[in-house]
Image (cartoon, rainbow, N blue to C red):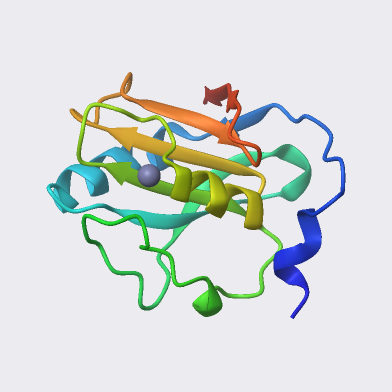
Length: 138
Ligand code: ZN
């Protein structure tokens, strides 16, 4: 399987990512429901060319827990409409941990972290290097 290595050594052009309000609400609701455990899912776009995140994919075997090892990436479906990951932090910091940065580097192009109180202003988007990116809410 070479899917994991796809991003290595390859420059990925900057994209303006967008997310539907419904999808973001679902993320925030799910984060709230999982608290004090973490919530984790994959982000899916409807039409790859439009960069609009509109769906969540819950991985089989994804466990919510208070560690960051929540993604069982070998269980991920082979699906090119999946563009990244989302997970929650049961704290007030949506900043990526060292483990998060490792995950971002290995998989996906865009990542979301939510934090307490899981409101519209308590989440951030990141690219695969862990730099913050703007994700426009539609
Ligand atoms: Zn994290």
